[in-house]
Length: 145
Image (cartoon, rainbow, N blue to C red; front, top):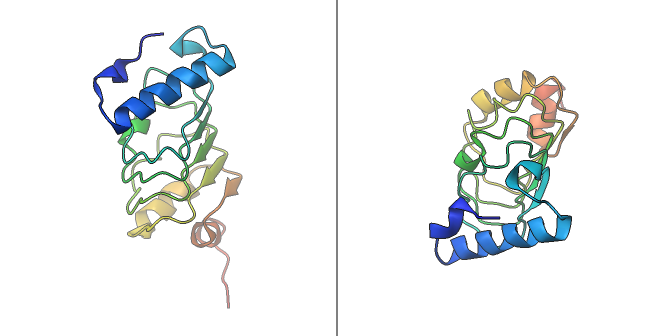
């Protein structure tokens, strides 16, 4: 399988190697077959677009140093997304296209500007599990005393 990410160096090489390893372990024949991808704990600061994985449902990118989510722009089929333990500060607008999302882990990031993000999450009717306590209370309109 040829990866479009081959032009990336250093951490990009780690990314490419991790993808190739996943494809081999799972027995995927082509990018279209990929439904789950584990890219956790690789020290990644950014991730190239994952748009070649159109059927991707589960993505683990936790425990990295990711600062933005632009790599998710075309992954409409995601149902599980593990973003915990990264360096995210603002995710407003980055997840609103993920209508099938059921599980979202966001804890241990440095999220700011939460108002817009909370409104986007409220519109995600499929979302069942949300790991960030603030978002959980806001989504379910729970008042804590």
